[in-house]
Image (cartoon, rainbow, N blue to C red; front, side):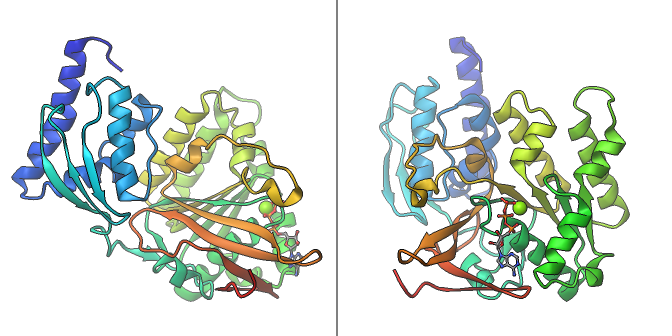
Length: 351
Ligand SMILES: Nc1ncnc2c1ncn2[C@@H]1O[C@H](COP(=O)(O)OP(=O)(O)OP(=O)(O)O)[C@@H](O)[C@H]1O
Ligand SMILES: [Mg+2]
């Protein structure tokens, strides 16, 4: 982040003005504001403006963007007026901005992005068709909320129904243990062995040995790139982010996560990253305030899994799509029902 006045001016010219002119020359100024949230300035914002909070809500994203550049010192103060809702926002950039512009941003303009179906009954409807190809999606939930089982089921179904190639990076369990668990849950593990490759912690440990620094990440990246080059990879599961952090010895968490997610996007596969939720401890009577975590901003989508008490004795599994960039998805909780290798996502009946 440059600290001189000239530096800031150059940045402003380079990023904002340049992008706006480019957008105008294409006759599509709205693309500019949308790009801020979706692609273009995200990298710049996340690294340089720690206060920036990406959001799937167009209006919120605009406001967050303006506020963060205020804090970053690019503008004196915010005088931009936002009207609209989560899908369409009209932004009137105030006089304090040297590049006064009026534009409207629609959040759903990118609809039509290619999707990967989950083949989980009911879930593709909730998702608006599936996961956008190439996105990094967090699957978050407390232990036992079926993160591993659900994501394995998605790889399994994609392998069976459309011969898609899956890679399950199992950092908490060995391959035999994961396969035994999935077989016990009712999945035909043998049937997808050639399409669902499981890379486990034991294998990585053996390969990596005690060599140079950062061997984990390097090995993981190399293996995934090789796998992609040889067989192709459509879907990747990383189970789990917490295990990866410990094994790969993340030092600067935010930067390392940012690089990992960017790298995964460049890989071209769609990635599901399993993460332990921090926020759903309330049903245990624990109400610990949690800071919003970096991965939630950096990911393109978040699926939340939880156990919901419906009476003193009964608990129901629930699922919701918390965010999914570039998708018209439902936002409320649905029930997640599991029986013998078969998941169903159904509307919640009891409160
Ligand atoms: N038929 C079944 N056989 C075994 N476990 C089942 C079955 N049906 C539901 N479960 C539940 O699934 C849970 C395990 O699911 P899974 O391992 O996918 O959860 P997870 O979210 O990955 O947990 P963790 O955070 O511990 O890795 C068990 O705790 C159990 O409650
Ligand atoms: Mg698990």
